[in-house]
Image: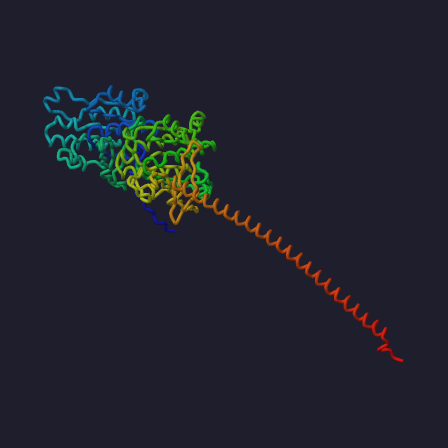
Length: 571
């Protein structure tokens, strides 16, 4: 029996995870294992943090020891800087999981300009073999190349390093500092990009005085990768890349309803919001967006559902004080721990940083309900495209965890049916409530309408929103001659109609009394006529009887007279 030999299938490129959230997603697994990656960027872009975080995560999570070769900073500076991210490099060195090599050049070497990497690479190899290093970083190698002052020598040393990495096998990361806007087209270091298997560009810049960073994978040999720019954040834990690519989590769907906190609004929504849905409240300043957000939060707290309220316009104390004026009391729920209010100045962070902070709050608090008031301020912290990506990723996260989310957004101008906040998040939210002002009779009154509510029947009416010390409510729709009236005009018209109804009722009552009197008079007159008729009938009967008596008397008289005369007597 002949058996065909099955040829071995070619193995795909093996990847080394960096442990940096977002980066491993956009690269499909991390950096190319046992190959060389180049990280380039301007000052403060995060090159050293990226490289060191990759080493630390490798040692901690995957038990892969690493070596960090520093051409710019000394080991003391590196250890001190890493401590700010919670990385204890000294302990890791003692445990043999990390080795930091000071590769500063001596003054004599710098002066002569004659040196090479042979000796250093030999010592690194010995240390690598000793600790079984799997990852190695050459940080700021451009510092070394700057002192050579000879393009030929620079290329020679870089190729020497590249060949050493290829022969020895560890995954290599080389960082280079480049200044200027056209980082990738630098004539001085451009050749290194062609040598590396993976090239990562980091940028640090300002938009409207807000500090922003982003990351782009320029090339990745043998692998598919995301080619767009992605926001990069450096926080207390290190680097985080916002990929705007939600993980493969299917959105959950619930038919359960939750209250908006306003009874009549629940009626307009056929029972309230769907559990886990997203709600957008838009309106001009002063239309009561925050009030509706607070009403929803209070209703959730009354149901004992953990709620996060993120306020970018007011501090927690201001929010509690202001809402109490409309009978919304948040302080007891803060004290009980069911409500957590987070307040921060939006200009202090980019929209991506806000997103990461919100994600951490959700992870820590595990809320059932979330309020962000207002979401539109994020556009001032990084631009429209970034803010829209942040909003979409946030809604994907809350939907996947069945967190009912209420967002407010500022609109400018007077167009009630157009969201002009710049984020255009209304296209992806489930329910959209619009608040507006209606100017009538010298007054400015608040109005609420439901522009959309997916999956549920909802009212198409425009209702007046009333704020008072008794709370928040919606009035019944009131129209007069085809126009919806609000405020004083509404009450004046109601009073006028009430007075008109009262006058009509009084006129009807007067006519009823007159009719009753007329009826009584008629009945009395009928009774009198009846009696008169009966008297006349009696008189007529009497006359007839008298006539009959008279006739009988006359007949008897005639008979008697004849008898007396014997005139008619027969014999």
